[in-house]
Image (cartoon, rainbow, N blue to C red; front, top):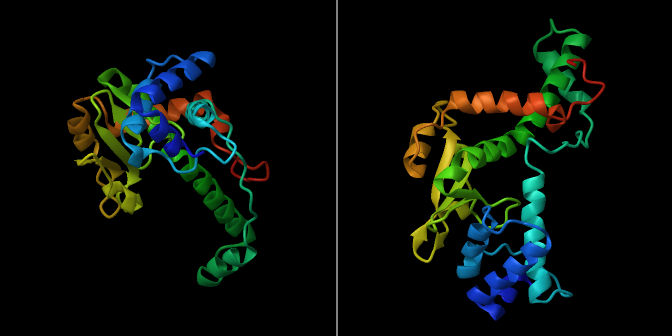
Length: 243
């Protein structure tokens, strides 16, 4: 049984009660955000992720999988995770292409470029996670809670009032699902930086969330503090000559 069918069968109220009991069994504080997030999917089946639940699940076990997915997402936040090393090797032809275009570069220069690129990709892989955690830390007191582990379809944050928010790092990373609606209410959207100009969009997020303290400087401080306290968040190969 898929989660959507489980919630549909139980109805919103019973689904919420079931989720509360399961959360209690896992010693999860229902009032620490998870309840507000589950309320969204319990009352809007269009927001239920389609990848939770299977043939062997009943209503209770499908909801339990959602709760475990939410908790796994929260436990994998940037300040707590150990990221995996790149699972691929660099293609040697890339260095040949660059070397053919800039002939003054020697073998060591090209090797440094290769590993700088790999390091940059590793940083890009965790940027979204750091942004998500920064917002979670700074918005929870304003009634916004993170839908950890992609537990609400097309939504990253939910407000205690029922508002929905999708966040992206760059303007060119938005996708078609961002136009989805909930009961006729548009999912609010925000991106951190305008890709073609480099303009930061924190002012618009402060307006959406009715705050004043979110800024690029504060986010930069959070990035440095997060990596300093948890270096393993950024995976670096031992063979990387930059370390």
